Length: 447
Image (tube, rainbow, N blue to C red):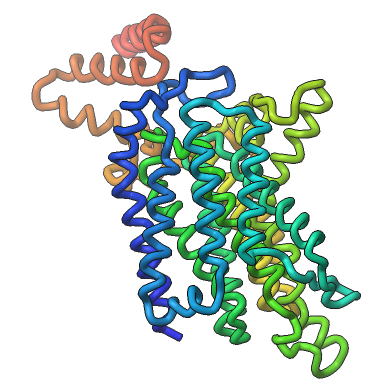
């Protein structure tokens, strides 16, 4: 079992390395072709930033698939299934439309049609939902039209959910990376825990998706040097949807042999089968909620559901006082809590401590969410090792005084400390009042 993990890690690292190395040249290319739109009213960044980061991510996807095809433990995925080719075909189509949109600003209906066509291309090549495990009913086989419609709907919803959440530096790539990590653990357990070969493509897709996001994140963290654009957000949304479709509609629950024993034991054992119905929703729970709220909000205001605005969840975090980095970390936290909580519950469904841990983590998240202006301070001994905004101001003032003592007299040192504190505290507006206070204190001490 160790050898497949090494193969997945190798595939992930190659994908991340290729994506990371391609992002720099892609940034220069985006600047050269003018893929740097002007600042819009809904944008958070203050300077024009190039797009087309999806070109590097698509290069990482191709590199990951090529490497996996030549590895001993992963090449069987390409021999026994046509899903990798279906993914590459749909990804190439959606990526091309995204590149054109990043450059020429295509109409929203054109992009929606391209998303449906990309999903149909994957369905034609076999990446579709064949059956659904429904609690209390069992496995329900779907007709060809039902499977096609459900597959197209899931692909379109996932792509647009990821696209809607791509509003802050590093937000979409980080959230999809967290979701794909949780999905990888679940799919890997199905393959090597239950020996289900049908889960192998989803395991490979999620490993490659993690590499794409990890390779792009260093260039996209705040302040971002390049944006992934629609070419990147739609691409990673499609790969995430492909992994969900592969696990949900391709894994036959009967192969797990879970119906033996008591009824209660069978119910608990069937949870890994029912989780695929919920896991694709939990891993995009935050983006999906943002998508639904945006559609309701815009329709209520008489606008098009595709009209852009500043009412997304990450915009609201900024409005209540959170910094850019803290808003992104809060979104990361909730995504990880929901995705990994669902996976943990599918593994140990009979353990109530998992529920208590999730509730405790939710309480911590709510506290952090309601404290937007709280800035943590490091201990005094760690002031030299943390950024200036986390240091204690008193320690900085004492350090500055000690450095000036050899060259200043006692009165000069006092004036230097006073000027440094007033300038650091509130600028020139506090100088007058502090000078009068200190001079009065000096006169009183003279008496």
